[in-house]
Image (cartoon, rainbow, N blue to C red):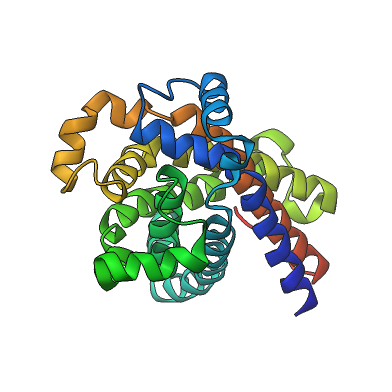
Length: 279
């Protein structure tokens, strides 16, 4: 239990640390003309709203993505075991896809209310200060639907991300042991195994960010009432912008976070005498 608590604390601290980047990313998606670049965007936010604006929505990110990450990683292992036993002769990639998708469905149901409040707090300075006043205000204004109206776009963003992320990680680990290190995992030191985990984790986070960026832009547009429907959001943003808008910031956020999540997750497994993940 102590080790699990330590991992949760580390995972939550990652999300807290990158809150300024997340605030900038969401504002770039909602107002791309005003926030056109990373450095200029930070400068605009600090000049107009003060440095404290960079930490808006920290509680939603801390708790929301902490809960989501726990569900994602824990349920992935659970479903991988189930599908692995049921689909004995099936390609491993299919098992990775099914396991990650199943885990992400439940993880996003847990995340959605936190995300709904977080995005509004980050882009509407008068909405609320955080979760404590944001939850009741959102419920009063929009009812239960307000917490979950972004669930389908959230699945649209996170399901592809999770499926690609886990599958990329698994195959990257296998490829590194087979083609680069050219040794079996059990013949490598713990430090080498965790090094493989970090490299595969960063690759998985970066690839997943590219795949899921269109849906991430749509989620921000819907939550901030820039569009009433998914199709309207796509039309307003434009097809090319769906893939490129805020992408460098997302990779800067997601790559290191996924790397650290895998690192600490596998560190726990190593401490408990289990092999590292993937492959």
